[in-house]
Length: 147
Image (cartoon, rainbow, N blue to C red; front, side, top):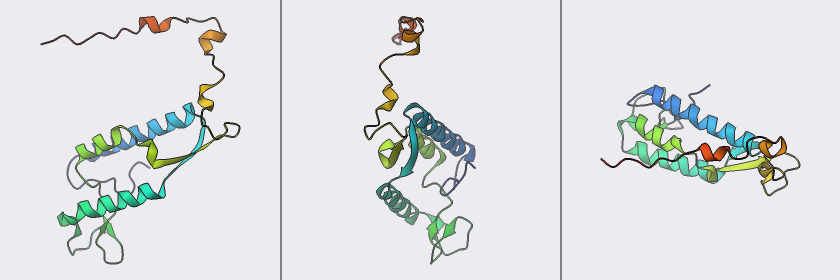
């Protein structure tokens, strides 16, 4: 499932939002694998801040008016839970770089509380298998050409 709470759009392309969500999930999975993380859970404080942000945003829109809609819930039917609080382009920019500080990470057994198990034992595969230990020399950073 790609779309979930607050992932649809009130204006703009839904595909942009879905593509951004998928990109965010891929970055999270890469972090989990790379850093030997067992699980990640959103911090309660971050969730509350998100809900406050959404409520404040939607207060200024027509979406909270007194009509029945699939994207609203709550006691008074005024809380918008189906739409992203902004445009499709806003969602794209917001999801481009994950805010890891909004998450609590649980590391795999044996990693200790430092979370530095991803550093391994100090050697790379190239070091161990007599591979190309100078491959980084092929990574050329060409400066931009002035207009």
